[in-house]
Length: 477
Image (cartoon, rainbow, N blue to C red; front, side, top):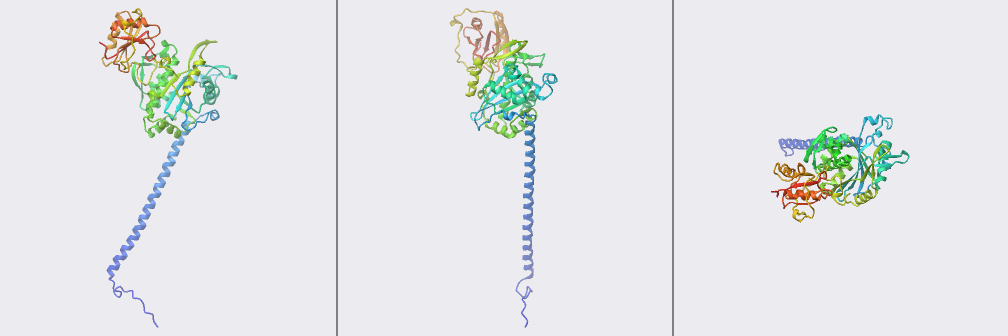
């Protein structure tokens, strides 16, 4: 028997051949399209994964390169000296500006290694992330210290003797605080960092003229400095020879420039921060990696540098001992200062305690006040006999050109030795301030300018280089 075959003839099954052909083609198209789509998706996914791997690898290499630069030449013993910091709790960081003097490096006394360079500037920073506060305390490089078997030395010799680890240990003991992080800055690299942030703006209460050394010639008032000029200002101690301790004012200028850089960096976005750190990597040696640096900086976003960056300098007295000038620390005043710093307070109880006030650079404007509510003594109420001698610095705190010169001329005609200057902040009030015991001279100046002009003792926020200071405000007639 033969089994009946199922017909394969479309017409025998009642199916139109053309319809079957269309359906078959459509089905095959759908299947092939799905395969092609899956293939494309797979290729895209693979491509993305490859791209991510490449970018991640490049980013890792980039960060690794920066970290390598930041830690290049780092003293291997440093990590054994540094104290651990905890979360957002305040910690101390040692900042050293190194003076890579070739003549010193080649001398028989210090040798030719990097450690032969003495630290040119020493700064202790207290960093408080939780409260967004930073305190910068400069330490005289010529401070006399006992370095044990190395004898009596200037404190900056610690770096030359034992590198970063020994310098950190010596300064930690000297200041009485634990140091958690370290940064060593090639001062020549400061110019690159300032240029990277687009320059910095600072206020100069007096002219900075240093033709024989740095070549600086900066006028008093607000100045926007490029990297080269900012770096020179941080070196210009001889510009202040007539004021006394040039290192005091130079250190204050360094703190002002650092504060100005900090202000610019903290106002930038994370990408710009990272880029700035990348630039710094060529000039800074530190125990910190780039990620912790950027993370720490981001915690200070919105910081008001005008009030939350506090600065000061170790109190010392200069003494000439065995043919060498040393700075001798005032132990009681130093302990008081560091106790205040450790509590998160300003190094100084009042601005008048800052010996650099009114002479060195600042970032928060001139000492000319805009307040009209001062407790002034009018000439008619004065109990002293007016004197018409002495030196007077006149500051124009208005928008009227030439006003300081006019007032200076008036006072000069009365017998005073005067200078005309421009204040960096405007003032509504005209007033007189005297330095030291020069109240009689202040009374004479005030009387010369009119019975409505009062005087007071300088609280340290005005220049201290003359007997009397005059702030010419918009109320001057």
